[in-house]
Length: 194
Image (cartoon, helix red, strand yellow):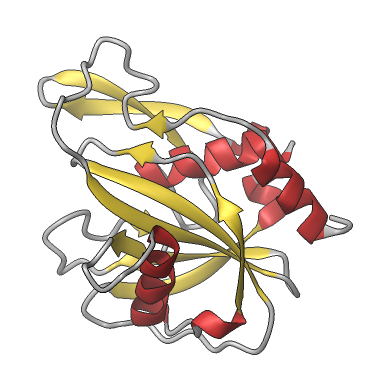
């Protein structure tokens, strides 16, 4: 992947629309609720060209054991959504904000749980030893960017949810079943990168 920074900047410069957990389910009406602002970090290691993901703790009340980006809701102490993504990455995986070169944001993603999630794309350049916050993260792992930007690796699957079949994207990698909002955000990112 020659000149990764240029490819990422070009991808982020493209226009695009917001995505949602409802994209593949035209029969499900989006709720008219006020959405909670949140942000996640699509952290890409410059040296290895891998994306950092987490496996959420099985003890969590919401989305236990699922694969996710580091991130969460915007706190009152966060000036911007970028600040929220960097703070959450520092708390959840021990990523020092000073070694993240924020390149930009993708359009927001609306979740079925009432969040408007802004994906923040950043290049990680420098030494970093991941440290999982044990209350939230059971594992930190990395996926090659080449795997995530290849549209052939994405599948559409479904399961019953609230009495109906709900479709969603997946992008499996080894033992990791990446699905739902994380896979949808990655799919939108892949579309821009190809």
